[in-house]
Image 1 (cartoon, helix red, strand yellow):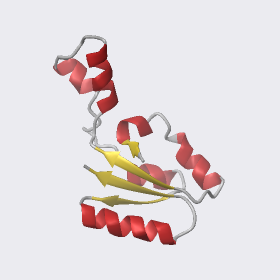
Image 2 (cartoon, helix red, strand yellow):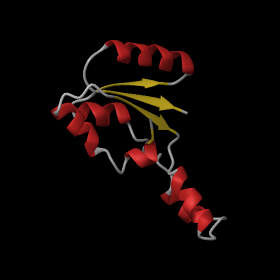
Image 3 (cartoon, one colour):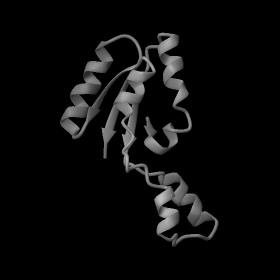
Image 4 (cartoon, one colour):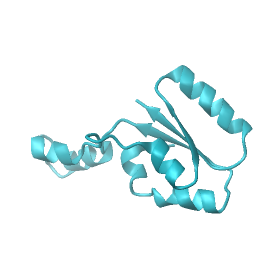
Length: 106
């Protein structure tokens, strides 16, 4: 389970999963922003960042396409836009061997 912002720090792990043929399913919760960095700004007293700072924390324009990123690293992937789709994709992933990624758009 990983947020999309944090996953950008560890994207190379997808390639390792494919190379080593690991039986791992990764779920990326895609909210299209670096939420953890917004928390860190508050911790250092910058609780009301301006539009320039907020723009740096935005992961849209363009949106990260985790399905294409994963597939480019050799990992099967799918995108869930709602809970029913996620439940179906997760159940399917548990039935299969090998690396897999599900992008759960939230």
